[in-house]
Length: 195
Image 1 (cartoon, helix red, strand yellow):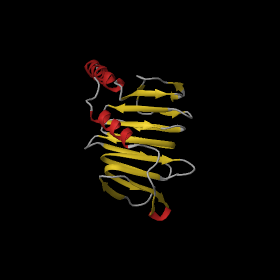
Image 2 (cartoon, helix red, strand yellow):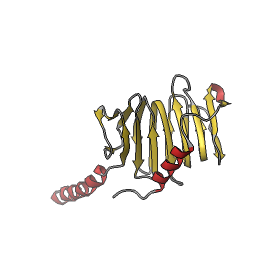
Image 3 (cartoon, one colour):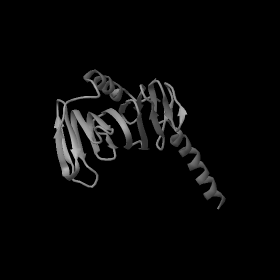
Image 4 (tube, helix red, strand yellow):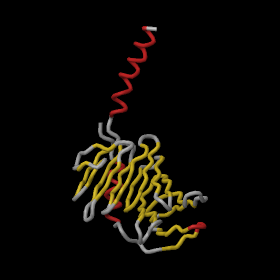
């Protein structure tokens, strides 16, 4: 019994540092940026379960150890549901521009659209004006409305849609992000993870 308890204690001691390791960091914080309701600045650690909120006229850029980077725009509310081999983000409102290293398992769920990424750059918006806007900037993204079959979009140029009920896709013009922002995020996503 004592050996079993010691063995379990050793296992826990080895596992705790791995669990405590930061999964991501805020690399840019402009204006009002909060993690779990507390003000956050550049260098702040983000982990699974955290809620990131960005105020009006504010922005944040986050890098993840899993090989992704994302930019949150003004008035954004995002929850990090899972990080690691599978990254899951829930965009409650606002907008997110992401760059994801090829081979990553990365999903962003908004109230009316879900994007499963396969190594790409994409932009998503969940606002009153565009509750289901998605732009696949470059690469492959499987896009679906909740409870609907997805559509794989593979492109080397911007493809922008409003995904509507009954799987209707309405083409739109590019807005809310620039090629320069997408390229900068791609560099961050491709960079080796911090130790």
